[in-house]
View 1 (cartoon, rainbow, N blue to C red):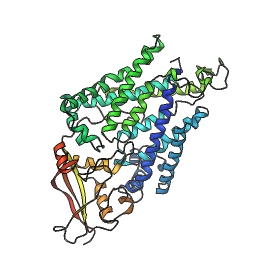
View 2 (cartoon, rainbow, N blue to C red):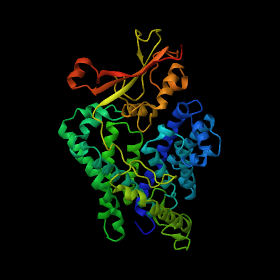
View 3 (tube, rainbow, N blue to C red):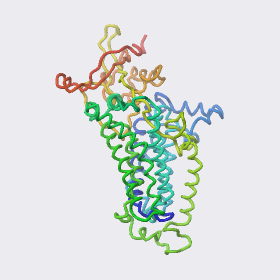
View 4 (spheres, rainbow, N blue to C red):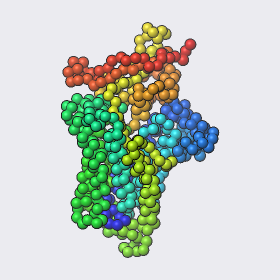
Amino acid sequence: MDGFAAVDFEFARQVLQRGIAALFFVAFLSSLNQFRPLLGENGLLPAPDLLAWAQSSKRAAGLIRPTLFRHVRYTDRRLAALCVGGMVVAAALTAGIPQLGPPWVPMICFLALWLGYMSITSIGQTFYGFGWEMLLLEAGFLAAFLGSDSQPPSTVVIVLFWWLVFRLEFGAGMIKIRGGREWRDLTALTYHHETQPMPGPLSRQAHLLPRWIHKAEVIGNHFAQLVVPWFLFAPLLGLFVPGPVPAVVGAVAAAIVIATQLWLVVTGNFAWLNWMTIVLGFSAIGAPALGPVAGPAQAQGQGGSEPVGAPWIIDGMPLYWVVLTCGVGLLYIVLSWAPLRNLFARRQLMNASFNRWQLANAYGAFGTVTKERIEIVVEGTMDEDPDSATWHEYGFKGKPGDVRRIPRQYAPYHLRLDWLMWFLPLGRSLDDWFTAFLVKLLEADAATLRLLAHDPFDGERPRWVRAVSYRYRFATRAEFRRDRARWVRDRRRPVMGPASLRR
């Protein structure tokens, strides 16, 4: 680092800008495919109803985060246009096109992604109530101030990315230490691979590993989340201590964060949470040996065509850009007090925002691990009498159903309906959206059926639907050799129904 300019972190900037933009592309694609059947005009939880409620009083309006749809009437077509526009901008940033211009060009592009996606999450209700939504938004906001290829990245902004990774990882570690006993007695991973919301194709193999490996996983997790994040800030010592050691320490810390996240990618489906953490981890990897990506002007700190030593150029960056990024740094100093206190609070909040713009948030995941996997299975029948009927299962894309099917890898794509199905057995009662979902199945609603992997009635309306719960567990190696089934399940109890639209 060299004063205001993080001259050794050009490679980090390239990974951050392109990686964050690519994940925005996935997020907008996920919304394009799923928002309308879940939250659209005829969705399970219609967003227009929420917006109408927000307009009913000032108190209600204050509970809704900023969204363009407060000023422009929501329609499904406008939602689709917003998603497509977001995908176009994200694709351009991933290709590095706006970064070829002055720094305010990629800034406008990232701020457009930030505001556009916030407009979706603000009305997304329970289907968008995940920590990685606010993580993407905060990362997108910070990425807006990484600049362009015409000058080095700002030291202030690079350090803010380290602070983001610290809150993300250390916050998750503290949540676990304060959470379930299983994290303290090192048994959490004995259950987690099996009971996580959406297993991946290798989750069963991970679950069947020896118990001592599961304990080692927990120890490694505690080390990666509670110890390693402190060393992400080591490159700052390079401002005072000569030599490569501070940068190497920061890079090693980042590599450990990235490696642990790659293991989570291999063994589960956590949407873009792990992928985003991997991208953010590169912020602490200085790679001066790679040289400037954009050209020699950047390495020389010339800021494009401006003469070296000109009063409007500081450390190779335009003066207005130095002022702007320092202003962002000051803003974060103010906003970070609440999440800093939260990290060390006895009642630590997880995935919480302390301001309407979702900046400087608190993060965390899996403070407790469920010991048993209960799945809600939805069935339908064409028979008249539900008591003597033959029932057929609806198949979901990601969540367990068919015991012989290998779980698929979907991350970083987010299957929102499947994730919400995992939460159902954990609540005291079934959510309103699930009742609406059963009604849509009875109506054979085409948009809703496209969210599923299998409709047993090929678009025809069933006469009855019901929901039953099963206990699922991974088959042992012996059970798999005998039955060729990857899951073993047993019937637990009826949950809802039978229900019908016909009297």
